[in-house]
Image 1 (cartoon, helix red, strand yellow):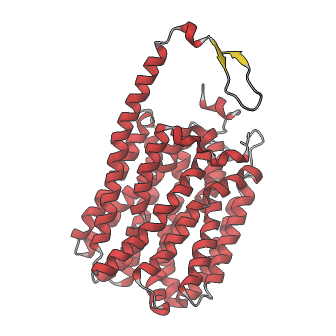
Image 2 (image 1 turned 180 degrees about the vertical axis):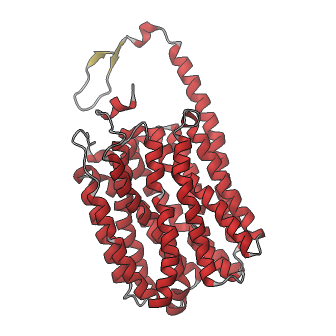
Image 3 (image 1 turned 45 degrees about the vertical axis):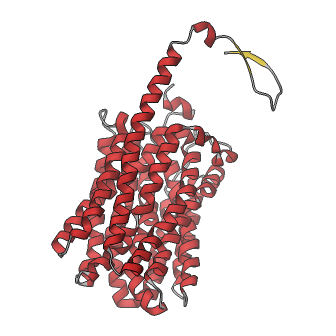
Length: 436
C-alpha cells in the first residue's frame, strides 16, 4: 500500500508547505540552538553564583531533558489542538522563562526557569513542528526535514556571537532578558503552521503506544539513538571553555560554535537532498549509521589538537558530522514507522531519550572536575557515539536480513492457509469469526 493511502489523504509536497517548513525552521532553530548558545554565559554565571563545572552543565542538560521528556504531552496537545496554537504557547513559555531567569540569584532558580519551564516550551515547539512537516510532505519529506532542521545551525551561528556581544554589554542577566524577547518570534513561526483540512488525527491515547517495543527496527533505532544522545551535546557545551583553556581568546572561542553552525546549516539541507535520492533513500538507515560514526570519530581526534587553526578544522568536521546526523535522525524514524505512526513514535522516543540527554553533559562536566582536563570528556563522548553507530550498522544488516527471510517464508505459504477463517482474540466485541 502506498504511504499516502495510510494517511488517508495526499500530502501537498509543496505550496504552503514551504511556509510551514520556514516556520518549523524558526521554532526548531530556537529549540536546538538555545541550550548550546547558553554555554556562552556559563563562565560568568559560574563565577557569579559559585557553581562547579558539573553544576553549571545541568542548566543545558535539564533544558534538553525537559525538551525531550515533554514529547508525549506535546504530541497529545498537537493531536487535540493542532500545531499552530501549541508552537505559539511554546514560544510564550520560552520567552517568559528567559526573562524570569534573568532575575535569578541561585543555580536552582536557573534550573527551574531555564531548564524546566524553558525546556517544556522548547518541547512544544519541536514536536509540533516535526509533526506538521510529516503531514505536509511525503515524496519531498527528507528535503523538507533537512531544511527545517537546518534552523538549529543557522540560529546557533547567529546566537553564539550575539550572546558574547550581549554578555560584554549587559552581563548574563541582561543577555537572558534580551534572549527572552527574541524567543517570542516562535509565536510568529507558529502562526505560519496552517492546519490541513484533509488531516486525519489519531486518538490521543495512541501517543503512548507501547506496542512499538514489539518492532525490531524501532528497538534498534532507539538503542543507537540513546547512545548518540548521551554523547552529542557535551562537546558543544564545553567547546568554548576547552578552547579558552587552550589559550584561545574568548571571542575566538565563541566563534568556534559559529563555525560549527555555519557548516551545519549547509550540511543539513544537503544531506536531505542526498537522502532524497533514489540510491540513498532505500538505504537511509545505513547512511544514518555512517553519519554517527563520522561524528564520534571527530570527538576522538579533538584532544590531539593544540592550536586554534586546528580547532577550526575540528569545528568544521564537527559541523559536518552533527549536521548529517540531525538531518537524518527524525527522517529515519519516519522511514521506519511511516507518517501516520510517527507522532506516536516520536513522543515515545523523546521521553526515553531524555535520560541520556539529562546525564550526558553533567557526566562530562564531572570528568573535567575530577581530572582537571577536558580531553576525557571528548574521549567518552566520541567512543559512545562511535559504538552507537557501529551498533546501528550491524543490527540494521541483521534486521534487513531477518525481514527478507520472513518475507520469503510468508510468500511460500500456501494460498489456502492465507484465506482460511480466522478467529479474533477475546475482548471488546467477544468471539467472532471472519474470513480474510
